[in-house]
Structures are given as C-alpha cells and as structure tokens.
Image (cartoon, rainbow, N blue to C red; front, side, top):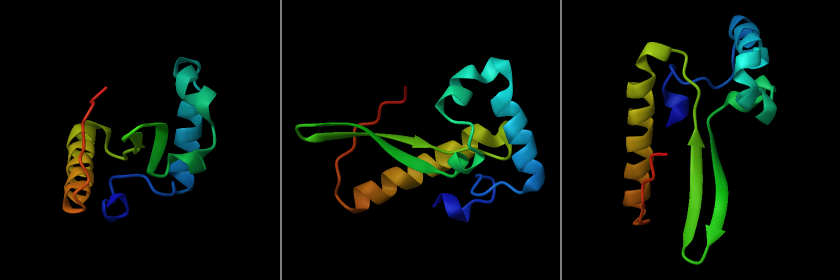
Amino acid sequence: MARDDPRIIQHPNAVEHSIIQDLLNHPYNWRVSSDSTDVADLAPAIHITSVTDGWIKLVIRVWTRKIPQKDDIISRYMREVLRRLSAEEIPVKVDAA
C-alpha cells in the first residue's frame, strides 16, 4: 500500500535524509526527536500499542513528501488499510486521535 505511493517516504534519498535530519533535530520538534532521530524509522509502520481482551490497538504512521497533500495521502492510505481489514472480515473501530 504505502510502497505504491511515491508521496509516502520509504527510504529517504540523500537530500531528503539531510532535510529530515535537520527537522528532527530542530528544538521545536522535541516530541519527534525524543522518540527517535533515526531517519530509517520514517518508513511506514504499524505499531501495536495495546492488547486487551478482544481488542488490539494499532497506530499507523506514515511520513509524506508532499506536505500540502498530506491529508489526501493519509486519507487514501487509511481507506486502503480499512478496506483490506474489511476484506479479511476483521472488525474495526476507528479512533482518529
């Protein structure tokens, strides 16, 4: 899914790597930089944040190359994730936090 959209960062090229590293090191981005400053961590990822009886909470993270189009990019990506879960008959509760 994310691999098919060139607007979603997979592996930053040299120029992107430098720009992204500068952004992560900026003092206003303390929250991001405190998580990790490894640019390799920018690849699309799904994190399991909690598991309870009958529920698994996932956080899906993608970084985009086209910031003005980020809402469209992320919306398309999320619709595809939901479509694939539905195709597997996996019930989903969406929490857009």
